[in-house]
Length: 597
Image (tube, rainbow, N blue to C red; front, side):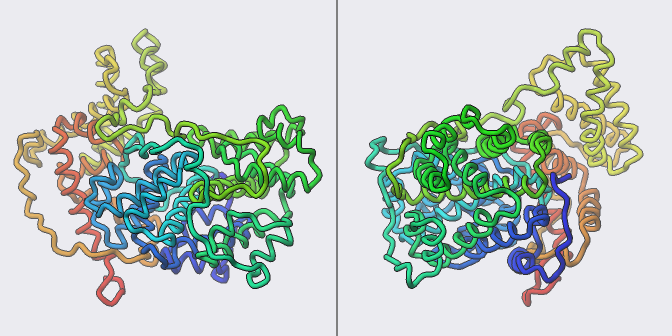
């Protein structure tokens, strides 16, 4: 369930019409903001210029950048959306899977790989970007226009990731089985010399304020034209969209005050170690009457700056959203509500923090020099994701973190039988879905679930914690379900040595799917349709899809649960996906004329 209620905006709401035109539907991320439609207006305008406007980069190149950055920053909902969009655009699934695991091995030309590497570094540790990183793109013959668009797409990815975390919007697609840890590391800077980070990095033609309304608007409301906007003059339409977003997000004061928003911009920029925007918003706050020493205290530690408790809580909220997204949740919203903040004000805080992330990433990528002498200079630090690993060192999902069930399991093993009920409640849904996927029969699945938990209880003393308890439990369920299938003698051997025969399956109509399956089916009907076709797959493929794509087990965990080797598991997973796509193509594939097949 989302953090915020939705308000029906109707077919006449132009931002939704524009989003529907480009996506084929209105993503949940935007539906969750209908309490404040001006936020959606600002975001739709940015999307139109950054993502939908064809420029130096094609739409498919932009979506590849978004997918790669989303995976590198652990934004799995975003990665799933961009994965599905690339499927619609005709990108082969084999390449998409490789982009998620290691873009360097995706078979792309060297110049495309260089672009993805640049975006990954900017998205994960923008403060460390240098002129030399941009020069590397020039070596691969990327123009300044292409670099500017890459920076903007990466900034857009940062914006979407923060917005998605803050809104807790439901994914638009069934989650993909994505890596549990970031699949690759951005390359370190080739030089740590501070001069290599002095910018700006791109050429920008001079635009006179008198001939360009957005610049005149900035001068009127801020007293100057920030360099970060002048640096984008290769694309005036982008500046127009950003200035309109500033008008709608920052300068409209129907909920949060201008002071509150400027303080959010200041503390989030400080958390991102962005010297440029700390200097800009320090200057703006000074013009609003706040003493410079007080501004410095807010930037360094707002909790010790003498702010009212509610204002300090607002800044706590914004910083946590950006700096600790994995820890952010409903409790943080409840904390703000306890201080009297309405949902509209909280929505605005989320949008402001996310927009600050966008602006900070943009400045890092362009290397823009401060408009004012900074009172405080922030040096780059290690990546926001310090445990980025190479593909060879990447852990499995089972080893990625401590087992959340370890304490309860230990209590049961020490004689606390009541603790087992908590384990049942926590995992019954997953076990039931797994068994339905194996058996294809809800009644049998319920019976098998009882057998599974009984076996788990009887053999819990043998569990030694070499894997997570959830993996061990799924393995027990899989063995229970597969034994029932063997007893019914309805499947052939499922062991690893069985020959993959394709069971008569040959690809016949894998075509690009239509952009808007929601025009054909309601959400519930669509889900029922997909589940129905999954259940019709042969059991050996069906169970692999259930474990990997629905339960999101890693390849290693799914292979262990089924007693298969990793190569055999991968083979069945790919074949099962192709079978499912083949079965669903008549419902969603586009004809050569663009209509539904």
